Image: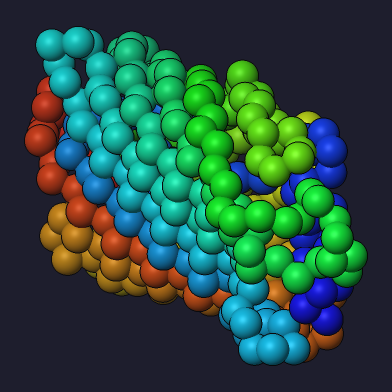
Length: 315
């Protein structure tokens, strides 16, 4: 099974001219908008740092017991800078998939516009991705295949992203972004590799129950596509007293996730568990996905007026 998996993995990733490079996915999407949309940088009038750690498809191993499940770690920090009429952000990411390791860093800038009922951030991002393949760990079906023989090789990709993010005070938000616009190309082994352009559309709404203002319901949706396939994440969260929250996410043909967390003043901690509904889960190859979220936001209180207080937890 190990040989067969490696062969399939290589065919997907290294076909002579490969085009697919799916970006890492997360379940805490409502906390990870900065990770997919540079327009959000500094828009919350707060210095925010958001970290995510994801263990996907736990239990996915080969017959020799080697772990093959993806592992992803992400950190994004953004802050407003009034001198440049916007905000900046710095992001880091590491994504491990079997013999493949991706390490990325990116820098973002967003220009802010005050609109009649809210604020709009229009941003750009430059990103650098170090993609590495450990050919020495591969066990190909054909031992003489020259495309799969060698030591660790790496290639650096430079690409760009654009995005717009709109916030209607603490009531609603919406964003549209385009990542890996340049579709940078590079060589690994005997194959060419191209990053794939992605489009993200997200939106959400915070609704305080009129009969009991201790409860707030926050439905949201994330639509993502690489222009070949489309995936939807539909989420609903309930927050009690601005401190305790829980929710459910549905990702068609992939997973149903439950999540819960707590907020201490400026720190939010969350955990989610994805129940794999794809054939991988039904065949017993995956025990689900674990994800931990940690966010710290230091609210600067810029341009705050008496009747307006921005909700920075879900953006």
